[in-house]
Image (cartoon, rainbow, N blue to C red; front, side):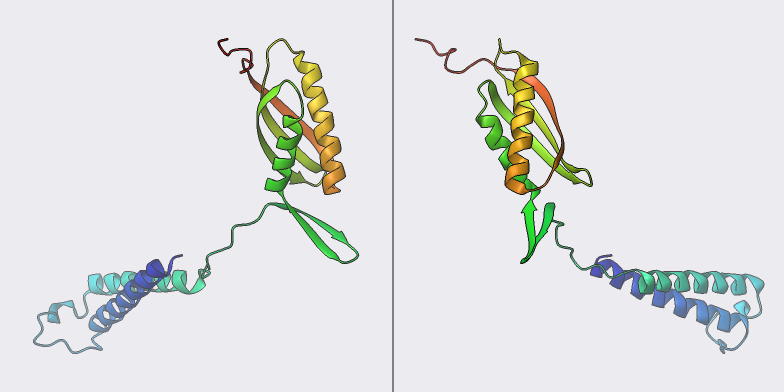
Length: 182
């Protein structure tokens, strides 16, 4: 909860607690209210019920504030691969791995645009790629080459296994060089 919200609920809970105690005090005739216009509340069951409800609401609000964890602004969890060697820990950001996949895709003739996402699983890296390819190229062979090269490259560079490389051929695009007017 944000600090402003906690403060507001805290103040309201104290007001409810005070109102509930005062109302119950009047009902039980523990508080002298003569001359205030509240004399007719003394001994009235409705006043006792209302005081009890107000007190319970105040207690609940107070418990919400005291039992809720004060959350500090949490650091953005970094998505990374964690490796260990004899000198310590190695972390490779998944964003860096995604850029490695982009590098592989740029080296394959026939792939024009690539979007990537990489997730780390217990089985290894799971690579998702959306590609746009040139026309008149055998798509299954092109994508198979890309998958194999991406898997080999990532395993060699990161030192971690690649569970799967999933590719979506999003579109076929015209080669920009051949579409220019001469």
